[in-house]
Length: 148
Image (cartoon, rainbow, N blue to C red; front, side):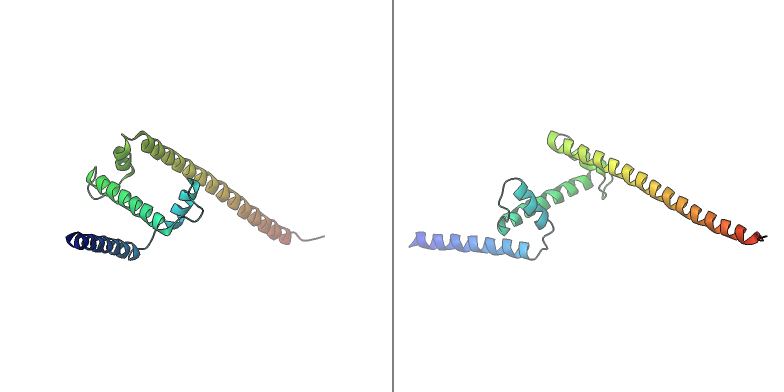
């Protein structure tokens, strides 16, 4: 009989743990569900993975981000997270370090491309306005000329 009671207690503990997990995950808005589903599919999972699987992975991702943020806040300027702090934290993991460097390089290239696009757009707009203004001036000068 004692073994049955121990078994029931174990199930009750498991049920309590599951209920606590469900409460914590249900009480929090899922931030990365859509992206994680796509990533899981891209890495070979079903096109519609189980919600529980996505929730577990999201919990792991949020835990990782939280830990990295706390570590980064302790390094460098206390209370602030800077890019250099993240690079410092991943420096010993070659895969993470390479990925961070790739992302930073792509970010710089995107900034340069946006700046160049904005400059072209601004130059085109200025030329357009200048053309319109010159046309208006030409019309004013033509109005001043008295036809013979």
